[in-house]
Image 1: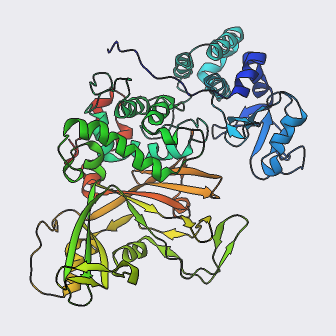
Image 2: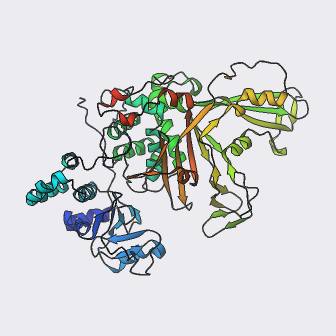
Image 3: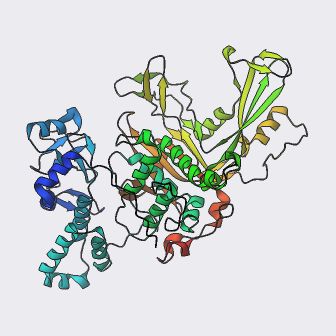
Amino acid sequence: MSTRKPSFQNPKPCEHLSDFKLKHGLNGFNLIEKYFKTSPNGRLSLNRDESKIPRCHFCSGYQGRLYFCLICSKISCSDSNHALLHTQSENGHAIAMDLERSELYCCVCSDQAYDSDFDRFVICKQIMDLPKSESSKDSIRERPMKKKRLVYGVVGSDLKYSKRLISAKDGRLKSCLPWGLRGLNNLGNTCFMNSVLQALLHTPPFMNYFLSDRHNHMTCRRRSAQGLCLPCDIDVIFSAVFSGERTPYSPAQFLYSWWQHAANLASYEQQDAHEFFVSMLDRIHEREGKATFPHKDDTDCLCIAHRVFSGLLRSDVTCTACGFTSSTYDPCVDISLDLDTSTWCSMDGANMSFKQNESTSISTLLGCLELFTRPERLGSDQKLYCQNCKERQDSLKQMSFKRLPLVLCFHIKRFEHSPIRKMSRKIDRHLQFPFTLDMAPYLSASIVRKRFGNRMFTLDNDYSDAPTEYEIFAVVTHSGMLESGHYVTYVRLKNQWYKCDDAWITEVDEHVVRASQCYLMYYVQKVLVQRASEDLSCLPMSPRHSNVLPIAGCC
C-alpha cells in the first residue's frame, strides 16, 4: 500500500452549516428521527397522514421544492424565496432538508450543503426502518438497548460502522440492482458531475480499462508535485462503485481534484454537463496521453480517453465555380448536433424556453445527423481561397465521419445564445432517438460516393470495413430552465433502464427514457456489447479485477 500522504482536502463547508453543527451538534438532526420515516422505495418521507400534503407555511403551496427546517420543523417552498424569508424571520434557522431529495439545504446560500454526519444519520435511519425478517424479529426485540447503542455508534463514528451494520441486518438490505449501480451524493449543485460520472462508470471500454487495473491509484507514479492525478481519482470511484456497497458514495475527492485541474470552474455553482465531460477527457489526456507519448498528436493518442471516444471528422469544402474540393481532418471526442428550429413559432420569455405548437413535427436523432452531414453553402463573407481558381470563391461545406470511435457521444444543443438579443434560451423540443443506430450513411466513404454517384474510385483508409452499428447505453437529461435545471442519467444494463438521480437509483420503463429531454447520448459499438454479453450482475462479489471481461481494442 502506498505511504504517500494525500493532498486532498474536503471542499470548504457552508459557514451556516458549520455554525448549525457548532451550536446543536448531532442533536440538530434529531427532528429527522421524529418526523420522518423510510418509504417503501427507500427514501425518507414525512411521517404524516397520507391524506395530507406537505405545504409551505407562508403560501400553503405544495409544488416545487419544499424545505423542512431542522430547528422548528416548519416547511417553506422555493417559490418567491420563501425559504430565505423563513431564515430571515427566524434567526439561526438557516439549515433545512430538501423533502424531495433528502439532502441538506442552506436557505441563506440558496444551495445544497454536504455533510458526512448527515449522510450517516440518514443511512442509519433507513437501516433501522427496514422491515424485519421473521427469523430476526425475536432476537432484535430481545435486545432493544443494544440496538440503540448501535445506532448511536453509527451516527457518531466513521461510515465503515454503518456498512458493518448494513451487512449484519440479516441480509435485509440486499438490492436487486445490478452490480456497479451505486448512487452518488450531491455535494452542492454537482448533479452535472454525477450524471456524467454515471455514464462513464458504465461505458464498457472505459469501465474495462479501470477495472482491469490499467491505471491503479495505489501504484501510480504520474502524480503531479501536488499529488494530483485525475485518473487516480477516477480509479478510486470505480473501486468504490464496484465494491458491492449500496450506500450512496460521495465523490468529494474527485471534485476537489477536478477543481485543481480546472480552476476556472472551481465553484459550487451549477456547471454544464457537456463542458464537464470534455474537460474531464482533456485532463485524462494530459495525464495519460501527453505524459506517456509527448510527441504524438490527438489523432494517434493512446490514452484511454481518446482510445474510447476519439473519432475523426472530415470536412470537404467544394468550390462552386470549378468543383475543386479541399479536405481537412479533425479529431473529435463528441459530436454537437443542432436541433432544427425552423418550424418553431413562439417563445415564452418568462421561463426562457421555446414553446412549440401541436402541429410542429418532432425532431429525430437521424434528422439531426442528416442536418450535420448535409452540404452547407457558405455565406458571401466566408468565401474561401480556391487553389484551382487562384481566387476567393463561393463554396459548399460538408461534414462526414472519416473514422468512428468505440463510443459515440452526441451532444444535443439545447442551449442557444443570441449575441444580437444578448439573451440565452433553452430549447425544450422533444427528440426521438433509436436504441440501435447504424452510422454507415454518415461515413465519409458513403457521403463521397453519394456526391459523385456510382463512379468507381478508392479512398485512402476509408474505414468502410469498420463496425458501424451502435447500441445506446446511457442518456444524460436536463430538466428545468436554463438558470436552474437538474441533470439525471438513465443507464441501460441488459435491456433494463435505471434512473440515476444523484444518490437515488430506481428502475424505470423504456418510455420514461424516450420521453426525457436528452442532452448527452452515449452509444457503444454493437460488437463490443456482444463480446461482453455476460451479465456482470449475476457474478459473485470478488476483487474488482476478477470479474472483468476483456474488450478488443481497449486492453
